[in-house]
Length: 321
Image (cartoon, rainbow, N blue to C red; front, side, top):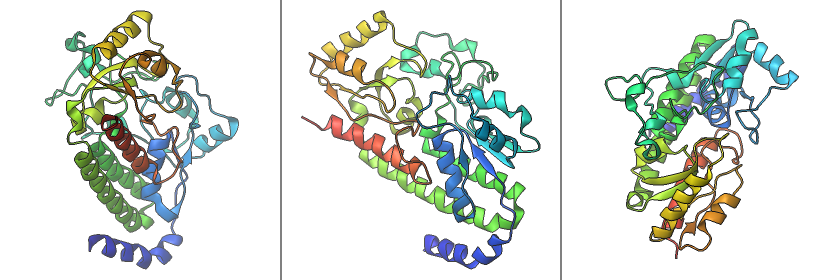
């Protein structure tokens, strides 16, 4: 009933919304672009700056993208830990409002030191809030995915995504109060979809935590924490790091000793190391996971499609022969 009411509301205010001033919005990565697209709806389409095939570590804006950034009325992005290239480029963005989602109050964050892969790290190196979530923020000139600090993949916790939807709506209303009702209604619909998605994935993965998995790189902590998964190991720490021989030997030993573990390649990453490690073991190779939406069609449905596909890949691998 709520969804029907909200849909009717959107239709009723469409005529009023058309006359309002919709800001030019730019976003950094496909996931954030998807969340913003859901809130904007038919009012406008945000621009996605980072090409889906690009690596955040060496990405450079094209002249047309720099012009779009400089002319933006609103910049919505993850944060410098994920997109240092955008942090370095925002100096000329004029009067645009910038919403750095990762560092907004209420966002549940984790550090790489909380990963099972870094249990031996000294957690005292990080500042923490009362919930134990570290809040060490790094400068724009540091490498993205700094593996001594904040893990930026916070959208993989659906609760964070739902929170961000509300913050995105607030930022749009601040820039475009004439369309406030539309943004609020779209945000409510998007949050309802995320809640349904969360419940569906929770049911699908309810037994998955008993079977540890191996992933291509250390990006899945939020997803694992939220849905009760156990990550036994990852091949690489980040997008720009290659695993060392000693670490690969440790992962191979884990696979040799494991009882049919699942290992997963990753979208936009070379699957050869995964196949090489699994060769000669009873390890099952799952479908590629796509934690950053780099192999999913951009748009409003990317976030839901991405998370559903990750859950499906894990379930199918663990239930396979």
